[in-house]
Length: 610
Image (cartoon, rainbow, N blue to C red):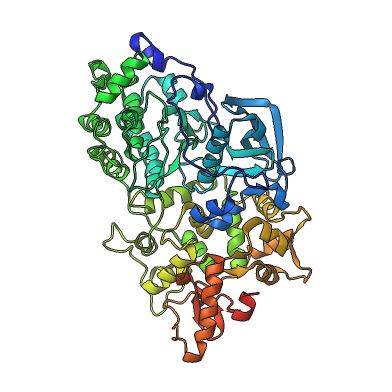
């Protein structure tokens, strides 16, 4: 990119890739950063821990899968050294709180980026900021957000392991090519917006969007962009205004600089700055810091270099101008930006249809025992980007709203093959009951799909999230390497004994899974009677035979008067287990799990409360 004249102060700094999902560049601590005033978070608890797992689980889309990635050494979890080989001399970068180095998973052999922070060596403000970052980051689940793989916390240290994004920064790629073609810029913009829309739809504001905070997951052509660095992110109550001044000066919005309060629209301004640079190859606000602040406050972007905009379409220019609007009320929101004609015209999206293999896996997931679903949720975390590529694109195409999740109507259309909500995909003529699993599910009544959706809806908020979708639709035998299977087993084997016991599962996911006590889960899978599940038993869980899928939901008789007590007890149990009531049914003295009408085992109420 152009580095002459007034642009040099902002644009001519160090260009170096950061191949990990955390902030590394020392310039994040420089005078070009606006002062950060962190929101209030808890201090270390009496046991010396800063991260609140209860708070994280309450915000998470899947509490069990999230809990499995946080390792509290005081609770008997394995150590970082047991799970990862660390290469302290292979430095990937440096940040405000220390170096980031390469690490390698002992079970899966994959590379990760490791940031370790000694609590005693950072200021209280920095520890609060790190704690907030960890708690928010652990809850995130989207294809365009780099995954926080594991967090290890002791009384003295917090260690973060993140997805290793070998493709480097968007900043570095732009620096190497000068500017993006309009087609490339539109695709990059769409991917960035999908990440932002997901955050905003779930009340999270990033507050530090910039070229350096988007990484390419690999060096392959067409590699996806992923958002990183949630150090300034905030869970935001939309009835209030945010006041903390934070972010990078070249990307910060007028409403943040004003000091009068701002909303999530601050992220859209920052994105407008990024897209401006992708298209033109220079920043809209440049010069010394005083001039930059003045121009940002007035929303006076530099459009004077006509040669840079000569080949940019009016739609693309209009898109940028709609984001660089001084009044946040007039600025596009994330969903509005995704619907802008520039992005809509750049890529026509074909109506998504779940294929036969995905439907088969989806049906098996709904019919499966709870212990098998727990295993599949762990396995979904082990998929490499290439292994998840097809399902990832399918997930994004089913999500028509841009919220980063799948709603019931969207899933129903994808199952039935609806074309933009109109005519369904043509099925082969059949006489009587459809013979294939895919055909049966496509023709199933709506109530059956509703039951299936409730199984996928892990936290009961009427949305299906990315990892849950992967767990339900992946073909385990086809996509997962044995290393991935071994890694998932190792994650559940908390004490490293070579067998997964009820105590192991309790340490990893908590007392219950989907409202059922962990002892029952292990009892269901323990074919040897040893009280634990070995690796071969673990593999056997993934080979459960299919059960017939009904085309209509089973009748659910209303409880008789004498059944009121069991129903009340079930209500108490569900509140204790933090499972939404809508996901469980009571029939007589039997607790019916979600989708029990699909042929899964029914658990006696007395055992469910054991």
